[in-house]
Image 1 (cartoon, helix red, strand yellow):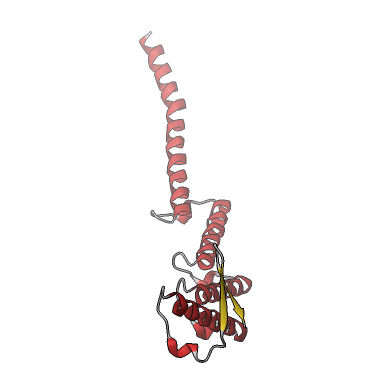
Image 2: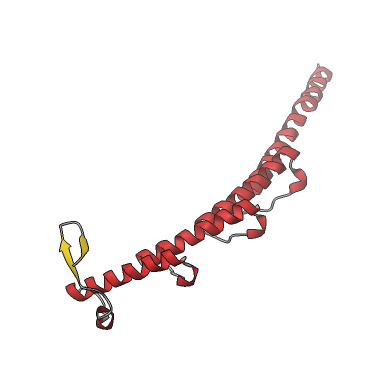
Length: 164
């Protein structure tokens, strides 16, 4: 009887333990894949399958593109395709124009097109005149002489400049 129990025990160990070992390897590989996806913990690329490695490369590329387009984080321009690099440049120019028009953010006027620069100058003149007439912000009186007279029409929601 003892011999029978011993055989059952040996068979049990032989059949079940490799399953546990395999589960441990699967967990370790799964953790490694997650580490590679996150980019935060050590990642052993040699443990990745070809498909996993390709997905990781694509994910890192997409994350970098997003970073470049949004400006949140460090952009690696060398990872971009020529088309993506152009899209990033165009997006950065639009951000700059918006910053110049709204005075929210950093404005580099040297990056503006001629039409954008003219629009920004017009907005600055209007803002200065409004500041002078309302006394709500900094007013540069020297700029008023160069501006043609304008009448401001106010409503509850906005102030509109009209040429006179």
